[in-house]
Each structure stands twice: as C-alpha cells, then as structure tokens.
Image 1 (cartoon, rainbow, N blue to C red):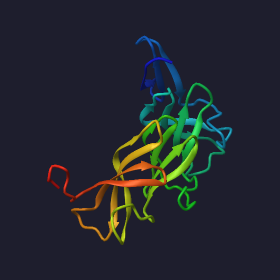
Image 2 (cartoon, rainbow, N blue to C red):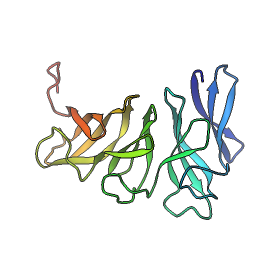
Image 3 (cartoon, helix red, strand yellow):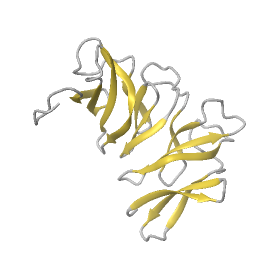
Image 4 (tube, rainbow, N blue to C red):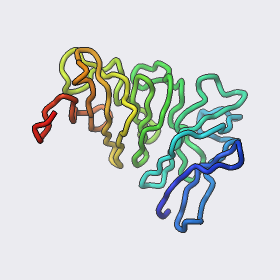
Length: 214
C-alpha cells in the first residue's frame, strides 16, 4: 500500500475530505466527503451522510484510516450523530458512536472522542470512560466506577485525561487518567499500561521516580 499520510482538505465553503496519500506526493485519493451517502457502516441508518469531520485522522501500520465524524440524516437518532469510523479501502466501519452501550455497564456513552490507534485497534474516550475497540469489539480500559490497579484502597478512575494515549500493534495500551477518591492534588494523575482487562500502574504523580525525583 506504500507510505501513508493523511490530511483534511477543504472543498469549497461547506465540504471537506479525508485524504490518503499513496506513493508520490501528488497521488491523493479522496477517502470521504461531507454529503457522501452510505453505507456508513453496519448498524448505521441507511440515509445517514457525513456532515463533518473533526480533529486529525490516524493511519496505522496496516493502512487502516481512523477518523472522528459527524453523521446526519432523517433517520439518524438524536445524540447518535458523532462517532469514530475506520476505512481500509472498502465500506466504512462505524467502530463506536455516541449513545452506544458502554462496555463497562451498558449505560449510553455520553460522548465520543478519538485518541489513538494501532493495528486494527483504537482508543476512544467519553466523559467517564476510556474505551479500546479491538477488531470491532469494545473493551473498557478505565471507568469512573472502577478501581485502578496498584493505587490502594478507596481510589477510583476519574475522568479520562484528554492527552496522549498509545495503542500498539499487539493490543497493548498506555494512557494517562485522573484519579478520584482518597487522593490529593499531588497524586491524582496516573499512567496505566497493558492490555484490555490486564492493566498495570506504570507511574503515579507524586511517586519517586528512578532518578529520585517525584
């Protein structure tokens, strides 16, 4: 497939495209346009069209393109418009949408944002949860009702940290998360790493690091 880069190009005043570059710098392919008709993915309403794209798309080592998009249509229910999609040369794949059931407690997801992606996996966040989607299956990485590993009693995940996260090609993740409960302002942020369901505490604010600093 060749080296891939991506960008968002304005087409007139109201349209934009997510583009993939293959080979030569001038070899650009329009992957998605606002107003494009479906299918926008399995279980996406037949009349749904893309109304906009936000943030930067991500390309993984396999050439999959992940992007955060807004869908609209007469049959698109309210509060389900935005989500994270994947494109790999065929039909779109809606990985996760607002109001989908949380993989932690099945409560409707209140918001969706694209964090990072690895080979066939992506990390999205809501206001209460960091979610990994591997091969189309969502897993909860952190949830405000859950207890993180290695942080002691009466400490819970707080709001996902809106900063860098990493997804590897082998299904491993590293991300930063707020902590709540029995914490102070000097130890309420931590970094966790591992696979979905098997995370470990990597570092916590206020801990003494390998150089002796906190």
